[in-house]
Figure (cartoon, rainbow, N blue to C red):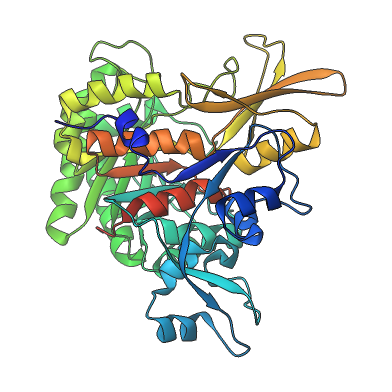
Length: 441
């Protein structure tokens, strides 16, 4: 019998997550769990002077092997001396920023944690070319594949190029693959249903685009393709699946994988421009893997709510596994939150996208307590600034614990982050402690 996410959490095999109480200090929590305050500050991205926020979650890990940096050490010499791969050193120590941060004598590096990964899975993450270099270097040790966002195409099927060289190089430097991303995003930055429909009407354009994709993959050293055509009309749903199958037939003999992103549907008959062009069964059969975009319930123009509430996510997963083999599925993971100004006014309000660590900093700055919605499994809080009330929903170790448990419960291939443009120590460290992140590409 397949274990549920709740059973995984109840068994206590998803590590220790502590919820800060009023009056707690970092040093008191450090003594309580027998872990150095400095390490707790790193793992939970606590800025000096390490003031804790009531309701804040703290990820507590147990180092089993540590290394004290010597005067002449480099990441290469430490790896050679200890036998621990640099990729693992970087993942265990987010403050190294994937080897881009300088070492100093006396610095403590964690080589291993007592919490051994108990499940193998693959993880992808999207990044724009303008990602800050240290954040890029920080993120890639946690990923199986980095996905630079995005290549488009002209009506004739010619590729619209992407400045992706630095992203591919950073990924490969730690053994992470890179996947080419192809979408209907046009030169003006919007998804074009018309461009997709025109492509499907033109065999010549499809041939041109398929050849261009193959050439780009081979020239850049990509390990495969991630395809994402959004808002396509329902009458082109099977054309889209056929095009994915066409790309896979071209790429697969050369060892390249094809992943297709899918809107978060809960039934075959679901209405809406986001959903009707995605046939789960057809796309699932056409691609090697699919990524379920299980986020954006709370979104820029919508009312305040969790970005990925667990009950809503589960409804999508339950439908997906009826249409697609579960071993072909990646579950979408949000690495961001939103800040709304209240009252919410439909058609007028616009939320601001924020990082998860940034959300905690806002609560700290305005002296607010963080609450946790036990149904959505998501943290939130309200605050006032210059006479305006705000409401914030974001991710923390508790919410990511609930999402990772779903990957395990359903037996999925792994997860995919939208996106890795922001640092999130709790989330990525938790992933690394729970999962043996495999490199299947």
